[in-house]
Image 1 (cartoon, rainbow, N blue to C red):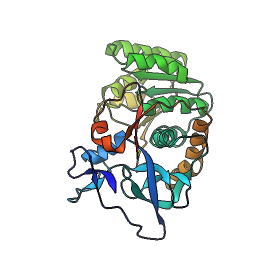
Image 2 (cartoon, rainbow, N blue to C red):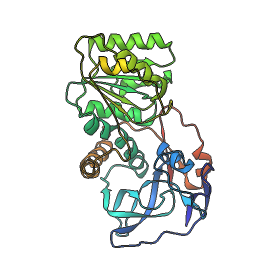
Image 3 (cartoon, one colour):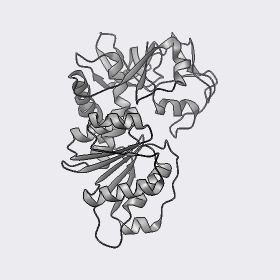
Length: 323
């Protein structure tokens, strides 16, 4: 079969011939792959930099962690891969898949799950969002951040504040449901003062952070209390695009009612992951099929995967490989 294969971590995937995977037990089934999104998770695992990366395989390994495709009976599904998914064939667990509704393309369906997991799991299970709350999303100009705006409003957020560096994309986020935007290209003190003013007028209940690093330090500084009672803030880190570490003052932790947690592979309860596949993803696929979710994608053929892997995709698009 044709596949995108990495022979040494850190190298680009190669479009090449690779041995097709075979079913090993009764819980596994073969999927004829149709579309796979290229995500930061997949890039991190392929480079060896993500905490879930596996050891090197001298024979190479197929990249990609999920896919949209066809079962042998013709049913179109989304599924996580037991084997790498940017290939003509992949092995999946027959008990962990989501049938797709009519009206949604393979490419759009493939683009959604990573972004939905990266926002819905944090909103519902880590932050336990309630209707009428105010949500700050740090780093919204990417695909997942844009999905988070829409899901925050879908789950009842009264106000959504967003940050980012791409000012053109920031302006477009009002159409997705953002109520206020903050450019991270401003001076630190300006950003802190804007956040303090917002927090004073409409206290921030939830922070979803896709950046971490210095932008997170600015937000936490803005949340710092002065000795009076404070609103409880549930701060959830989801990514580290601006840096994997921060400096956090003890004074901040002692001055504000702050719940700090992370959302990602390994941090979710089994029950929550079951709900992701049984309820959350089916609902999101249906919303997309009904054009109630705005999704911005760009597609490339499998043969062009090496070039696509390093392509800079603008305006928060998700790059999807068509097999």
